[in-house]
Length: 419
Image 1 (cartoon, rainbow, N blue to C red):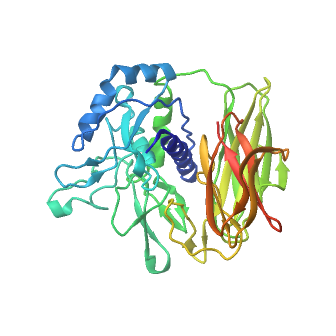
Image 2: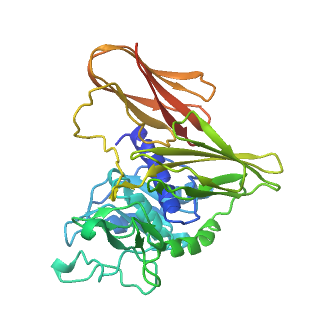
Image 3: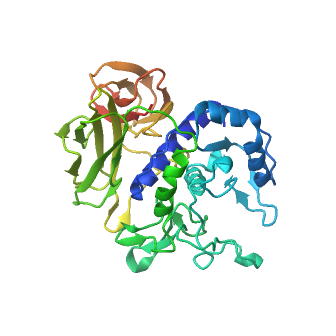
């Protein structure tokens, strides 16, 4: 994986982790302190030794001090293997935290998103743990337990939904499990997915552990920061059910004022100005709700936050589609502009469009004023799929639009650039 690809992966896992926190009702946001490419020789059978070496390296410690990073994660293209079982190992931490001198992790970049490995290892640094052996023991065939039976309530969870409980899911801190599917949640007995609780009091409550550890970790490398804002509330809604979102902010001085903007198409927004807001009912499967929050502090600072809400399930089935880059789908029969991936994004995102026949087309990125900031494609294209990488360059963070135009057709998608 090249540096540009790794940068894009980092942008995605940061957003993914924060989405998981929000969806799990955890009032915690992780922010990137900095990123740096380093030389690191991986040992295929030595990931546990590698993470110890990472924590001991003077250049890594210096970089951590320079950026005031509370936690350090090495994203690697290494291929680690467990020597006893020959299973792949996608990530590891120096010590299940919170522990300032041991707050180091290694994550295989290729598995950082699809398996939620980045969020999983970050959860370990907060003190969250795997499921107990009585829920799932992946080492049973080898005659020993490798679940986590440590006393306490910081464990991952597995649950069933749907008709006759045929749909089988596990949360982020649960180990990868054959014939079960991961859901982008940390265990929390106060959260339900499809009317099913995704945790258990006193035994399976990652959310409580992460909340309790947040203040400890934030003091590892205290920094003075400006006004920051984020949105607390659901990232997924069932059909016909309104949501409730709250503005959360830190730093700056009062009084504070709030601006909320809601849209179903990325263009037409309606407005609210309270600390909390209710609405955003989704009426169709596959529908998106786009939320923008602007917070003003009494000392003149302004902070923005963005949030995307999806239809959670239709007719009892969850609706979650992740683009893997290797989709095997039949070609559409009409002009199509795909959603950008990743989105929200930091450095780069990929934009693809489909033409059912050869014709002229133009793909451009617009700012909120309608000004074209970049033309991604222009000319005559053959029938089929076409793709381009959009690099944000020096653009400011915020809301942008990607527009596909042909002679008789126009389609627009929303982009969120995070800085």
